[in-house]
Amino acid sequence: MAEVQNNEKPTSVDGVKKYLDANNIEYSDIEQVAGGNANYVFRVSNGVGVSRIYKHAEPYVAFSKGAIPLAVDRMDYEATALQVVHDLLSDVNAVKLPKVWQYDQPSKVLVMADAGHKTLKEAYSDPDIDVAEIGRLLAEWLVLLHHKTRDISIGAGGNPTARSIYRYSYSNLAQVAGQYRLDADFCHYVDRTYGCLLQSDDDSVCHGDFWPGNIMLNQEKTLTVVDWEICRRGRGETDVAQFAAEAYLLDRFRGRKGLLDAFLKSYRRKVQELGKDLTVDRRFTQRVAVHMGVHLAFWPASVKWAENGDTKAVIELGHQLMRRGDAEDMDWLRENSLGGLLKSDD
Image 1 (cartoon, rainbow, N blue to C red):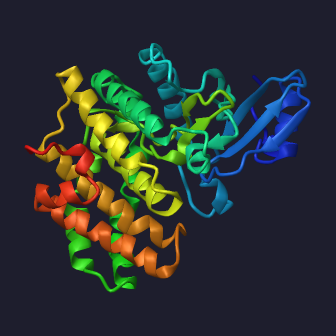
Image 2 (cartoon, one colour; image 1 turned 90 degrees about the vertical axis):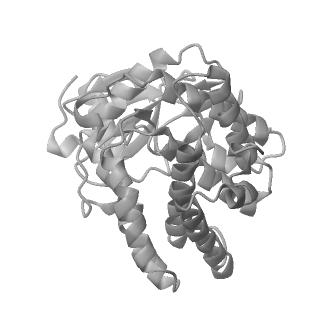
């Protein structure tokens, strides 16, 4: 494919048109896809009912317009992960990865199948979807991801860029705590004790941004896991915890449909069913609790879910999860958000 020139970068609809024309690719319609922050994402239709997703990386976070640097090798890792994981989990019918049609590595343009127009976060309140069943399917798929990729490489260093990005919430946790008059010193401790582990964790391939906003549903209600640019070698607890935190927020503010409990119970049961490699033990639960706590103590301060009073309550819960997780207080965790992960005899 033709390498993108400076005046042809696919960072706008016009730029995508120039890119497609330069590569003799037919199209009838181009629309920019909302919701992407790091990259430029477009839906390109060919006029006969087929659309594909074109995703392009620049050496910065897209929404920052160049102000926040971000290495473009993230697209290399995403392209690799999509193809490797797709093959490993091809026998799972309920949850899919988008098929990669083309990766233009010099231009950092990834062309994928269109997985649909609605995310699980957007669809959560729809009365015709079974949220608990979706939680079960995603949990079982995630166990298989963590189980089958223990010896799988996604590239040099397991994606160092993603490792550094993933610590962002830990590194800035104390600042948010100060805004809400919470214990900033404890946040520094959490970063030193747990945040540092993100640089060395190396058990399996992790999605890195596993939350309902990266789960697409099409008209047939097929689930597709998208946005793999910060996948990395790590520990599965972080994927579990991030999804758990966002499932908690959806359940609390969008209808209490049981996504969190179904997801955690199903993850634990699938691990027990496999009976090898993975375990849901006290160490696993501790990491899940701390990471879930970090997520709830940090992100709701900038991503609006509710009014200020409810936001503070969520952030306070995040601090409790960090403290109780660090102390391995399984009784408290069982009664507060992580019951689905803990059997009564833990």
